[in-house]
Image (cartoon, rainbow, N blue to C red; front, side):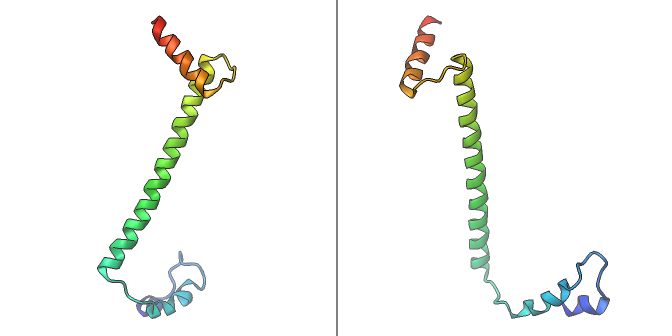
Length: 91
């Protein structure tokens, strides 16, 4: 960090950012094992978030398909299964 301060503050750095980062040398160092663990945890959280959003989208699409086939009439889960079976029997 001291090398950056000797060069002067670049114009894209917010005022005081380099001063705030001067104490970064006090942080503990990470081993490779710890770094990999952190990256796996972060990647897992991102993957779970994407999966939940895809699941939500799929549920919305199924609900829209059900409402389109019923002409907007609400129905219970069990009657939906029966009506799907009746539709398949007529085809």
